[in-house]
Length: 186
Image (cartoon, rainbow, N blue to C red; front, side, top):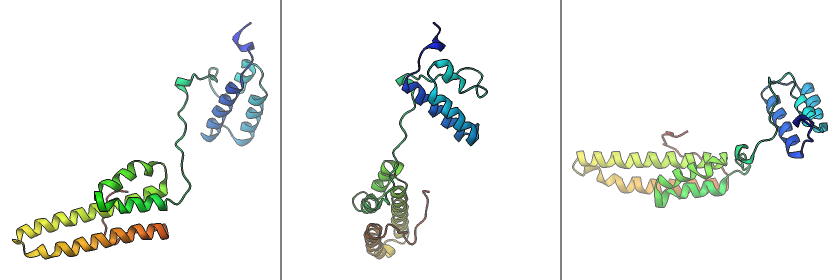
């Protein structure tokens, strides 16, 4: 008995369907041909029948069996929520961590949820802009021998209020953009 006469397992059949879906998504099959080949793959009893679903598509038989070590990793779960809760956390992490907290949210939760990423990137851009403003004011204060030092409390209060408003507005409406912000991170 040859290997082409062996019966296929449901896992092999599922793998063949997955490969056909990929070929359809790549545009290698039109809708009608995809349906015909899909039906043929689902009805296949032997490996020869299963391999015949790929006739004309590839030069050699498609391996429908893939060991666990070579299978594709599961796709990253994408959340459909508006991200208001974690977005608020990203804005308010600016208080204790300045720009580090929003950057961590962008790098972790922001990879899974585009809404959280949008809020975290906005918070990160604001915190980086505020950091730059404080640094620039410090340099200017040094050049003016302390004359501009009175602007530090004003800038600090403005930073404190806008960070709080950003978190509250995100929690309430889910949409907020800081004024006077350089959008360095996209």
